Length: 57
Image 1: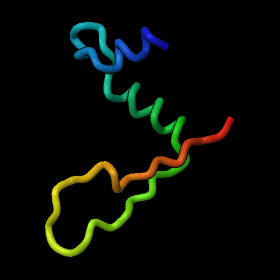
Image 2 (image 1 turned 30 degrees about the horizontal axis):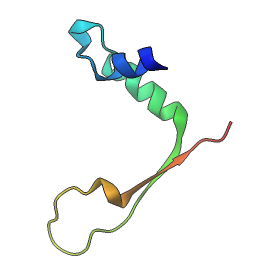
Image 3 (image 1 turned 180 degrees about the horizontal axis):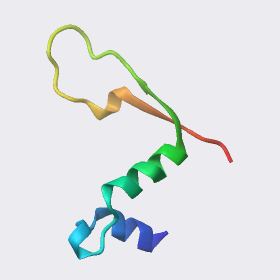
Image 4 (image 1 turned 135 degrees about the horizontal axis):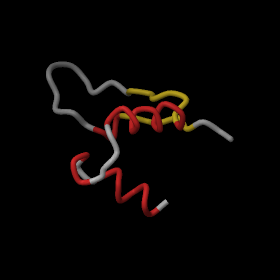
């Protein structure tokens, strides 16, 4: 797992994982993502308003 984490954050040209591989891993791990409303008007992105629903094995 440590090797996967290291490669996740490395740039692709330095041996990191390509974006397509990262998307595949995320697609397999998540069942859904709940996005809570941020209020009216334009707001900055707030990751606290996202709730990942992980797949159960």
